[in-house]
Length: 513
Ligand code: XMP
Image (spheres, protein in one colour):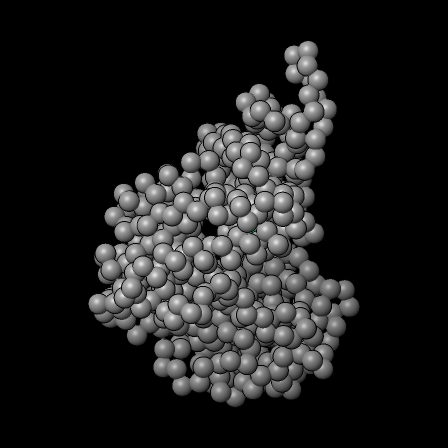
C-alpha cells in the first residue's frame, strides 16, 4: 500500500510547497481542504496542518475538529496550524504588534527533540505571520525560540504532536527540508519509496488492470503532460491507445510536423489532424480575446470528437491532468475553488470514462517520470504553451499572414534562447519558464536603407516562474536581446520594431490576452 501524509490546507500560499517538499523526500502526500480529513484510511502515516491568511480569532477562520487526528497520527502544525492547536487547547494567540516577516534564526532549540535532529545552531528560518503564540497550554513544551518569537516551536508532552510558527517548506528556511525529513521519515515512518521508477512500475500495472482490453483515446498537445501520459499508457496497453493531435493552425513554426515525428519515434499510435482552415475561417474578423478562446476551444473539441468517434469501441478518454490542476485550494473568502482545467471541455456526449494517470504528480515530477520513460530531453523540458496557441499572441484579429509573421519572429526568439548559453552554462531556454513573441496591433515608422517603413511591432516575453501563478520578467542579457531584435527586424518582413516586456505577474499576466 502506498503510504501517504495528509496536508490539510487552511489556504496558505505555501501549502503546495509543503507537498512538493515532501515529494522531494520521496514521500507521497495529498493536499486536502482543512475539513476533508479521510478518517479510517489505513495508508495515512501522518498529518500536517498548513498556514492560513486568517487569524485564529477571526470569526470566519477555519476550525476543524482535530479529535480524529490528534494522538492518532503524528501531527505537525505550521504557522496557523501551530497557532490553531495552541489556541484550541488552552493557549493564547495575539497580534504580533509588528508583522513578523522574513528571515530569523533559531537562537535556542532543544537539540534532543527528534524534530530538530541534524539542525545546526542558529539555523535560519522563514517567518511570515501577523499573530504570535503568547501563552502555551500547560502540557505543551516550548522547544525553540528566535530573538523575537518566544514560542517558535512546541511539542505536546508525551505526544507525537508538534507546532512550528516558521515555515520549514520555504526556501529561506535553510534546513527546513531536514526538519520535514525528521517529521516524515523518522517520526511518521515514511519508507521514502515514492520515486519515478516506482511510479512507472505501479502505474503501468494499475493501468493494465484498470483498462483490461479496452481502447483509449488521448488528445496530445505537444506539451510535456499529455506526452508523458501517452508514453505511460503506451507502456501499459500498446496500440490500444490512439492519440489525436489537432493542428489548429496556431502552433509554432513547423511544430506540428516536428512533434508528429517525435511521437512516431516514441512508438505512439498518433492520428494527426490538420484543421487549420476550419479555425482560420471561424476566427476571421474576431478581435475579442475571450471570443477567440471560445472559438478555438469549441473547434478543438469538435475536431477531436469527430476523430475519436472513428475509434468506435473506445471506452476511455485519457488526459494529462496533473496535481496542481486538481488541488481544491481555498481562497480567503473561504470558498473552495475547484479548478480542473483539463476536463473543462470534456464532451458529455462522448460518454467515455476518464483516465488521468498523472493526476497525483507535480510538474517537476512529470518531467522526472518522462526521463524515467526514456523520452527525449527536448520534449521533457519544453516550455508551457497555451492551448489557443498563437491565437492569444496575435492581439486583435487573426489572419494567416499574421500567423506566418509571428511564427517567423517566434522561431528566431526561441532558437536564440536555445543557442545562447548563460553564465551557468545552461541555455537561456532552460533558464526561463516560458517565452514567446506577441504581435502587436500597432504600426510604427522606421527606416530601412533609404526607404521609410510603416510596419508592425512585436513584444518579446520571457518569464521566470515556478508554477505560472506568479512570474517575473526574465533578465535576459542585453547582447542577446540586441541580437534577437536585429535578427527579427532583418529577417521578418512586416516587422520593424521589437520591444521587451518588463512586467511581472501580478499585476500583469504572462500572456497578453
Ligand atoms: P497567464 O497569462 O494567465 O498564463 O499568466 C498562465 C499560464 O497559462 C497559460 N495560458 C493558457 N493555457 N489555455 C491554456 O491552455 C489558455 O487559454 C491559456 N491562457 C494562458 C500561459 O501560457 C501560462 O503558461
